[in-house]
Amino acid sequence: MKLFGFIIVCLTGGLLLYGTGELPDWGDPHSPASIHLSNDYIEHAMEQTEVPNLVTAVLADYRGYDTMFETAVVFCAGLACFLLLRDFRPKKEYYYRHVPTGVVLHVKNNERQIAPGKEFEDVDKDWVPSDTIIKTVCRILIPFIQIYALYVVAHGDFSPGGGFQGGVIFGSSFILLAISYNLKTLMKRVSEKFLGIFSAAGVLVYVGIGAFSMVLGGHFLDYSQYIPFFGEHHIRALGMLGVEIGVGMAVTAVMAIIYINIVSEGRHDEGL
Amino acid sequence: MSWPIDLIVLTFVIFCAIAAISVRDLLGTAILFGAYSFMMCLLWAVMGAVDVAFTEASVGAGVSTVFFVAAVFRTSRRTKD
Image: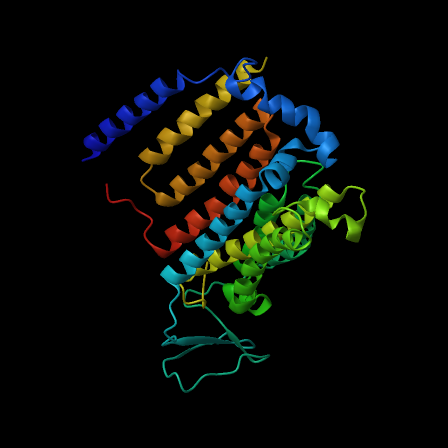
């Protein structure tokens, strides 16, 4: 079976390498893409959109429709994870740790739950004492990671980055919180309901900006319709920023949803 | 002319790919996938596609490695074959 798989992989790789022989060279000035389309973007994008980063100009303005459905695909990925993995059955067993003495109580009766507070704290089944160094370092790091993520989203039209990258970085700050403390700490900060609404709201922001420009009498995602509200200066860059914020919201929430569902087998009680 | 860097990084990419399928420990495979993604990120940065490199660094080397580790944590760490 392993040999069979190896033969299949070698065949597919050979076919792919054979196929890439037909492609134009990298950076070839006579390739079909470089004859008129790339030149048109490079020459006119700056004066048409006032955005220095051509990649963002192409992704969020010339090809904004594609990016909208990419955001919808990310949202569907989060939805699929939720539908496949979420397990609503209540837990059978609870573990509590008496903080002053360190005794761990194992409660098997669902009716006899203890309210965690100063005296008792919730612990996972395979509990290890949390490390002060890791906790403190992550606590200091997380705000900086989040500020950096917001910077990446806000400067998507001037420098590399944008909604997808910024959203992923913001989502990883949530994941870092869940890894350094425990999953319950994260679930206290951001509830499941909030994440679901937030991910859907991101897609809605994107579609809403596009649809509202139709209400104002233009085409779908035509940012120049917003000139009466924001003035003529940098209007397309502002529209792109709004769209990127929508993408960032959706991606942030979806990353957190996927991580929480995978690591707790859909029960949202204990993770890594 | 950046062909020496290309050559070194591509060697590392192939090395990481072969190591990822021959290691018996799935956690090691997840880490090797992260290294593979990082090498691809370097390759794109050399080509000048900075946006793609940034996406690969954050998604490929960052979050997807964490998802792999989480999946390994909930399943088994040893491969059967």
